[in-house]
Image: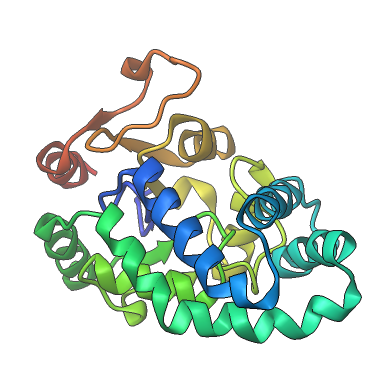
Length: 235
């Protein structure tokens, strides 16, 4: 079967990222924003990590947003639900400072434009642990437009996370596509290449490679953007 649909990861793929620096700036500024409400940095960051873990472990019964807030409220109390508005304000204002932990690669927007012209269906299969407002900003940082993609996964509209194979099954269901018609492109061996188990083709982008388990990446088509262009041409 021919490839009709291409799924892209975002962070470290279309958007170059120093993940450690990005996370450091992100947490620092979030803690500063919420400090006037009585949130201490260490406990807040620990709670966010626990909420993130709950999203990664989500089994589809609730949205990732609900999974996160269930943990947050269990630690801080139900009355802190009102502070969700302050999180929203943070993403509207200070979240952009985390852009310092990201780069920019014009080849990303060039590739997306090329693929759209070729008639491919495009999906942004970014791990849905961020709210839509934060995801849409990072799309813009990459020089792209939300409308470039038929589907963008966020914590509001998703009930699974990578590397759960159910995440990819859910995406396929929502775009009404068969795995053999899809190519998944990402930089994380553990989170992105698992799509191959469903019958998708995969390509491992090595510019910002994440390979936590030191897997032999030669088992996957891999390389930089130039090699990715060449690989797509062969499909």
